[in-house]
Each structure stands twice: as C-alpha cells, then as structure tokens.
Amino acid sequence: MANDKVYTDYFFDEPAFNTHDGGFIQLEEQNVPEQPLKVPEVLAPDKETDTDMYYTVIAQEGEVQFLPGQKTKTWGYNTDYLGKTIIFKQGKMIHITLKNELPELTTFHWHGLNVPGPYTDGGCHAPVYPGESSEIVFKCDQPAATLWLHAHPCPSTAEHVWKGLATGVVVKDDIEAKLPFPRNYGVDDIPVILQDRSFDENNQLDYLADYDPDGVQGKVPLINGTVNPYFDVTTQRVRLRLLDGANRREWRLHFSNDLEFTQIASDGGVLPEPVKFTHLMLTCAERAEVIVDFGDYKPGDEVTLYCDDIAILKFKIHEFARENVTLPDHLVDIPDPEVTPGTTPHQVAMSGMDEMVELNGKKFDMQRIDDKQKLGNVELWKIVNTNDKESGMIHPYHMHGTQFRVISRNGHAPYPNENGLKDTVSVNPGEVVVLKVWFEHLGVFMNHCHIIEHEDGGMMAQFEVYDPDRPQTYKLMDMDTLMNAFAEERGVKREDLNIPGMDM
Ligand code: C2O
Ligand code: CU
Ligand code: CU
Image (cartoon, rainbow, N blue to C red; front, top):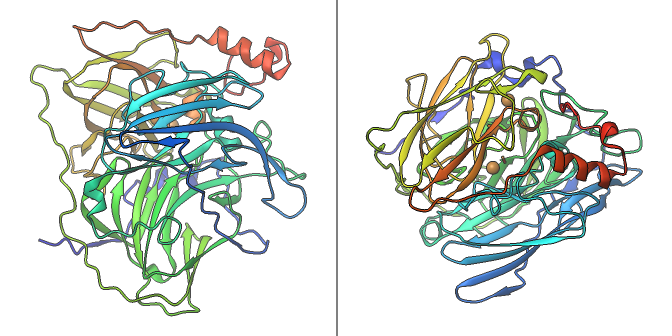
C-alpha cells in the first residue's frame, strides 16, 4: 500500500521549540548580493585499489569572504571552512591520515560511522596535537548514508565546530545505487549543511562573546558556508542531503507554496518507505535526505527554502529534461533484531538547562565509564528528557558507535520518518523515547545531547561495548592533560584558560 499521506506539521512539541528560549536569536535575511550555493568539493583519495582507499584529512586554518568587507578567519577540513565531502564505499578498507595544522589540539569524530571506539571514533580520547598526525584504518561496513565528520575535543567541541570543523561524509553501497534517486553529485545531489553564525564588527567569529550555555547562535544563516545562497536547478528532481550542523539551532524547513518533498533517508541511511512532507524539523546533528520535484515549475521561476519564515536558500529553475519517476513504496529492508532476552533496559535521563545540564544526574567525566553493553547483544535504551513541558527544551540525544532503531515516544509510534536507522533522536520535555541498540565494534563511546554547548557543559556520558572473551584496556584522556595542553597551545596560564561552561 502506497503511503500517500503528506505530513504538514513539525511533530515536535511546539512549547519546546527554540523560538521560546530566553536567548533565542532569530535568523535574519542578509542584505548582501546573492551567491551561488557553495557545493563542497569531493575529497580525492591519495590512492585507491580494488579493496582499499587512502585519504588525508587536514584540519587547517583559513579565511573566507562571508560578508562584504573583511574576510573571516576560519577553520576547515582540507579547505578554509567546513570541508570537502568524503565518500566511502561500503566494503572497502579505509586508511586515513588525520593531520592537525591548527594551533591547538583537535580530534576527528566520525559521527554516525560504525567504527571501533574510542580512538578510531575520534572523540575526546583521540587528540591529534598541533603539527602532528595520526592514522586510522577501518572497514566501511554499513549501508549508504549521509554522515559527518566534526571536531570533538571536549570541552571545546562547540568552539571548534563554530570555527568550521565539520564536513559531510557519504557512504555508498550497491543497494542504494539501484534505487531511482538523483545521485549526480553537485548537479542533482548536494549536501546542504545548515548553520547559523554571528559576526563581530570586523566580520570575525567571536565564540566567547556569543557564548550561551544553552547553545551558541547567530542571526546569519550560513548554508554550506554561503551567505544568501541560491542553487541553479537543471534537473527536475534534486536530492538534498540536509544536515543540521548548527551548535544549537533547530531548523523548521518548508518551501514556498508549501511545495511537497519526499524524505528518502535519515541519519543512518535509506528509509524503509519514502515519507512526504511539506514541513520538516531537524534538530542538531540530524540528517534527512529529501528529493524535491520541481516538475511544476518553469525556467525563470524561483523556489525558496525557509526556516520558520526566513528565506535560507533559493532554487532558480532552469531548463530541464522532463522525467517521470515514481519511487517504489518499499525502498530498503531495515534490520530489526530481537532484544536479547534477560537484558535490563538502560536508563538515560537528560536533565537541566544552561550550566545545570546533566546526564543521569552527573556531569561528564572522561575517566568514568557510565554504562556498558555486551557486543552482539540487542538492548533497549530508555531516554528521558526531564525538562518541564512548558518551559523546557528539546534535547537531541546522540550515541556514538551505533545506528539504532527508535521504538516508541511515550509509548506511541515514533514519527513517520523515524522508521529507519538513526544515531540522533530528539526527545521532547517530559518524554521517554525507547531505542533498540546494538553494536558491531568494541570500544568506549560517548552518548550525549547534541546541542554542542550542552555536551561540552556535561550532558554527556560514556559507555563501553565489551566482549567478555576479549577484555580490552583503553587509555582514556583526562581533563588535566587536556587543559594543560590547551593552556600551552593558547599561550596562557592554566588558570587564565577561558573555556566557557568549564570549572577550571
Ligand atoms: Cu556528533 Cu559526540 O558527536
Ligand atoms: Cu557522534
Ligand atoms: Cu541538551
């Protein structure tokens, strides 16, 4: 049965939308000349064989002409701001040299990639010091998906991402390759990284000046690092790989004339069935691949993508060849393993706001393992947002090292676009979201709210995926080592180190 329903609401609880935050900053359309949407280049491999791919990813300084006047100093991966898109093929062995050319330590976290923790995964336990590099090797073994790479040097993750350290990662496989989706990168298949930034009077990013413990925001919409962007549409259908790459902002997306669009994939890959929308909300770190059909438009027309009521991206319609493609009702099979009998559900409570954020009543400690799950087990995780229904906020809950299934929201079915694999799920105030979680790799992994200032502020924990037959020991980073390194690199005394949200 085809699901012809078109969803027209944002699903999440309206009283908890970020528009109600005390510190909410509304986006503003920028009075600067429109510019073509920057489409990140694809990162070329250093070497490629039938079975192996070799890459070098460099975290580097740069500068970008975002606004008229002074250029903005930025950070990026292999480029000035954000990065080049990294494409992996399922089944290949991937070898990556991670190089840090920044003046301070950073880490390279593969958000959504199923790799061992904690070093390959690239959280806070895997620092790469300035001028140094490290190597990771892993097998790409998961379905086609839109993932991302971002810095994760707790507790400075938010600042590193704010400066630009985030980029798209695309996994390809043979199943997705057969589906009737647009996939000509840069033409009808484009990453759309949604961010907001604030610039000082010299057009610079000043993270500390804009700091808000509930998440840093800015009034300037920056789409793939472009201010006031447009995209030239030369095909009837365009696939947008949407990523909420903002530190805090929720994106409530809709097109002019309520143009319908079809979501075909979520965080972990293709959905079991396409879902049609006129309105779609993304919270931090979530991805949605959508296909927009411009078949009812003619050359010269313009279609606008809005967040709330602010235009963030325009589509200029050009001549295109007519196509008549209907998506199959069923796209892919999604794994749905049975919960391992005799296991107890894990409990995760996200509580507080501002500096008071905690996970299970505690602040993050990188030396403490808060939970564990046996490799091969399938277990339930119950995620609670204890915020007040009227005044609380939505916390996007993320787990490293897995793509999970969303089972229920307060006992009800999850939202219609949550039936695929996900690594980030937003939880409304007062809600319990039940996940079914399994792992394919050993390691210590993090789980946290993906409002990045909340994660830096301590709404984060870590768990170990273990195998009793293969006990491991991990060298875990500690706050002292990290703080001393930051102080030295920034040329300040440890006590003068200004990392907001941190008690030195
Ligand atoms: Cu996007 Cu801890 O990660
Ligand atoms: Cu992650
Ligand atoms: Cu949060």
